[in-house]
Amino acid sequence: MQEATPPVDLDACEQEPLAFSGSIQDVGGLIATKANDGSVCYLSDNIERWFDIPPDPKTPTLDSLFFDNCDYFSHRQRSIFKGKHFLIANVTSNRGVEGDVMLSVNESLHIYEFEPKPSPATPENKTAESAPGFVHDSNKLPGSIEVEKLIRRIHALTHYPKIMLYRFLDGDAGEVVAELSDPGLASYQGLRFPASDIPQIARALYIDNPFRLIFDTQMPTSQVKGLSAEPAEVPDLSLSTLRSVSPVHLEYLGNMGVRSSASFPVVVMGRLWGLLALHAVTATPIPIAQRVAVTAMIEQRLARELMNSQINEDHALFNSNAERLRFCAKALIAMRDGDTDVPLPNGLFELVDCDALIVNLNGECIYRDELIEPEAAWAITEVGRREASRNVFKTDSLARYMTQTDALRQRASGLLYCSCGPDTAGPQLEIMWLKSEQTVKVSWAGKPDKVHSEINGETRISPRRSFEAWNDEIYGHSDAWDSSNVMLASKLMVAVLTRSVG
Picture (cartoon, rainbow, N blue to C red):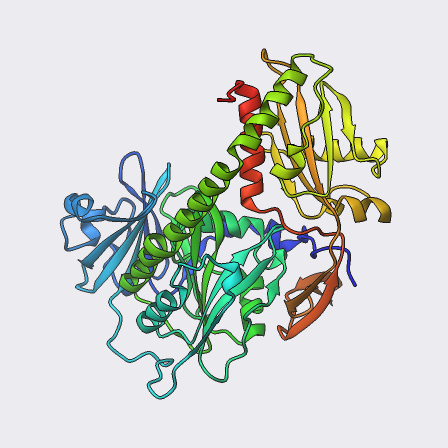
């Protein structure tokens, strides 16, 4: 039995400068130009495989590297992701090699990544005689989304033998909620993966990139070198689609028996909802055109329908609670105005699904669940104040943020904190909805611990070697806060702050 979801290790995984690896996967070449004047400033050291480079390339130009008229690249660019990534299809290098270019743009660099046209060979993983099986958890997805149809289309397009829809949970652990898998491959359906499997530094990169393709875990890398006579800084490859892979992640995939991997972010209303993860046991490249097509399918179908489903659910819930919300807002406004005869509205318990409540006004606790000691109430308040973003914070495990007694954990394992003020409309108001502890049975994809080993006298942290289901009971957790609860709590505080009660 363990107290909580395994915490993110502050180890090499989190500290590794992924965006500054200084190298790319050796499937294509990289040309980087300065954003201000368009001069070429970086080349990958494999570039001569596809391009003719002068013996002393002090100032090569983009035009000198392509047969195409580069002045017209801007007219041919097809934006594929947030105005940061563009596809320039069907270009020809100055050596006559045909390919596609993925252009990524940041404030200082324009990165042109050239991939030669793939050979027409049939992918190794394509099978005609066996249909992959599909399983999913309908309770974890809105019912109207045709997930199976979408994933089967992606399977037909990419020929990857395993495709998983992976959803992030509170606390940043993840769970496979849908899976399409060829017969004979181990299933991860319903299994959880600890937060440390995808460090925060990697999650941030997913938000800004349309996909992450690991062409072949056994593929060598090519260094990206500056053309300046002075030692050049390592370029920022945050937006590079060919960026090399962390050695720890390569080891992780190897332990899973994976040779090629592709991940497509599912971004809903600006937040990383989850990933569509593809695994293959043999080297299985996905041409740029197919990658772009998968990105479009996820954006236009899956992410959009998840967003619409959430909006519709929130709208219906708001309408059904509108009168309760107005009543609570009027009472809280009166309390902020100094009316001591106004009782705390019971609707606060009904508006948000909770087991206990703490209310502070102008630094004083005006309501506290009688089973929570005053010292504990203020400790919980401090957690909310410290962690809140835009005056809102939620967690299903207060044990991650404060020391708790068994009695407190049983009463207050989950916290939804909202505040408004201080401002001209009244003193600061803080409301903390609390949920009691719920023991949860969880199946992890392998025991969620990292392996510590001694190499040359130094402790090295390695990814786990087994991903077989490992059952566990976790405590120190409440039921997760539904997004609709957070929406109603936030709308209540906005109504109080703006004195908008209809």
